[in-house]
Image 1 (tube, rainbow, N blue to C red):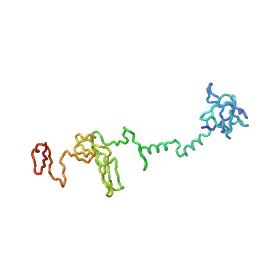
Image 2: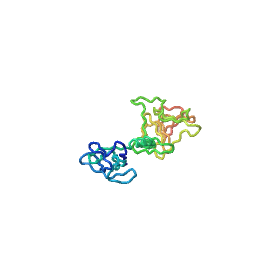
Image 3: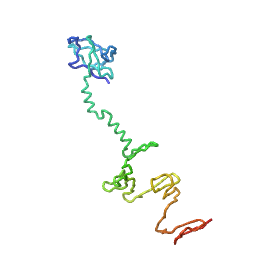
Image 4: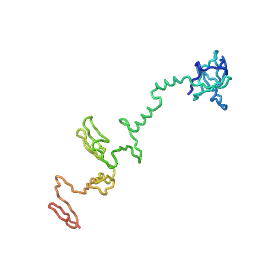
Length: 251
């Protein structure tokens, strides 16, 4: 980016005593130090390249563009170098303030939200071996309040399926579709319920549904067509038999 210099009443070609130097030719430098580099990649106000600057007939310095990226320049008309600053700062500031996204922060924010909270039809890439979303609920052994929800479906009036902050999941559908349908491509246990914290292992489970449809219950299974009957099998009869017990002897 080339910055605009000169063209104002405070940029003139002068002697050490402040006398104007009409039509004087000066050089442009990158700094005021003794080892400064002379800059010759200059452009006048009309876009024409030049290597030196020339004061006008009144000794004023016409507007010109400095080399790309230089915000400060030093000019020398024979009486020593002095610094000049860009004269288009106010214009650039106005353009910056009026820009739609001058710092690029809006574009960055949109890209972050698109990754974290995708719009309808969006896709979230869940990286392997990392938690995609963690919701922090009351800790230190304190239970959730059973009212606040981590996730909730509602029509604006009635809450339907909800995941409470105490871990409870209530599946309530709108209308009369299937309330819950589960599917799995894996073999082995399909549903495993533990008396305690959940675990993938069937050890300690109180209720298990396997992928072949078998149902295994650690306790009594009760139903209208089952009653209180108990079924046993083995070489010896069950201890403390009750009315209705069924014993299948084998061995």
